Length: 296
Image (tube, rainbow, N blue to C red; front, side, top):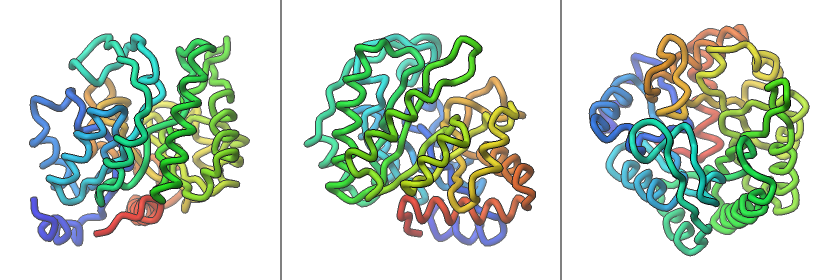
């Protein structure tokens, strides 16, 4: 759908921006064009986010082909070493093996200069399964990406998955390390977004201090664990996302996630903040435009 047709459609329906999706992943190989059509016809624009060289390049290719799509490029912390994961982006379903990649500043800098690349990432820390000796690799890659973001003047798309405590609650360890690196490397000078935020209000306060925004996914429709922090955060610092193909919201739980389902996240956010859906659609769209300097 041409952009002018999409904009005319959006005059009749409040638009939404899915600030973090992965339509370039192989989970969409069989019907990607149909999903993109549903996305744009549903009034949703989105940022497709890279996780290593191939998926970053593919995100840029999607952005080139479709109005209302942008890309983020970077190296996800799980890809800084060879490891196995029970969710996947390479082969369709089941366990996938992550190949090790060393961050290539020259490659990512060239890709990041594309006009439709709006952020560096997703990058940061993932301690959910990481062994202590792998954390140094994650930090080295993260530092390099913060430096690249500063060099080219684009915001950072942050990934942070903490380790779990014995009671299954999340620790603050990865968030605290990420905050430290951002302070040390001057990441506040470019800002960005903490994607799929699952931290506490105390952690949220730290990232607010350095000017970052926060995005919430379909998880907030499934559990009330994050209600407190969602209600604590000022609405001008909140974005919405799907993280497609992962974490589908209710009523799509158990299915492949898609950008149009971001509407369910907006509805839940409206409930928690006592606002109308239309107000949340407008606020989160303006927030995404501001954080990522989106032009349309």
